[in-house]
Amino acid sequence: MSPDSGEYLVFETTDAMWQFMADKWKEISSGAVEKKGHFTAALSGGKTPVGFYRRLSSVEGLEWNRTCLFLVDERFVPWENVESNYGMLKEILLSRISIPSGNVHPIVTGTSSPIASAEKYEGELRAFFKLPEGGIPEFDIILLGIGEDGHTASLFPGSGALKELDRLVVPVKLGAAIHERITITLPVINNARNVFFLVSGRRKKVVMRKLRQGHDRTLPASMVNPQKGKLSFLMDREAVG
Ligand code: 6PG
Image (tube, rainbow, N blue to C red; front, top):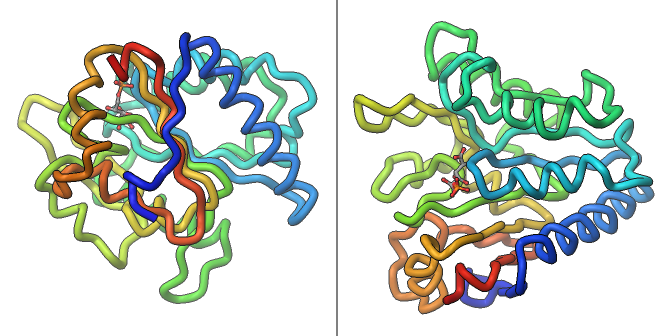
């Protein structure tokens, strides 16, 4: 499967998109709980998924005590900072649901460096998923967004992080004025059972067109290619144009 063979679904409104995603979350999470006793998801930050997290917080019948949440990426800032993905998740979702605190796995940023944070998070993934040497976690759901430059998670065009084959989590250095980041890598994303991109707004129109045409293989989002899982792009009408 490649991104051009992934499923592209277009919704008239973001509200309809959130409802679809919430229904999928319910279906996939209950299936996972039934099969293995728990459900795992890795969540992205950015502005697009905020509406979905708000919607998810009010869905009834979800087994939050069997749900384990991880982060796709994080900025190297304190959790209280407005730029923190965990800070946003806490405010919009976690503070509104009954999830045991031990089920939530944020990327710790109170370390000496993004390198230390990435190593710590990798250790956390390895311990949680009980991974053997060389093992890769298999998330039930990974939620991604896409930037206008085609980045996804904190995997930016031209970044060495895109070539990472061994590490599950890496630090990412951007321009001097921007916070450094920590991100899960492509091997983790591409080992998930279900990968959903949530895409909204006309600013994403050009990059989505490029992605669908499939010519530009340097776009990080075009490298998302789950080997055993399902890839879906959920887009609102504005993102399609
Ligand atoms: C982040 C994300 C990043 C995001 C895209 C799209 O932490 O910012 O993980 O990859 O999904 O930049 O962001 P918007 O949803 O804000 O457009």
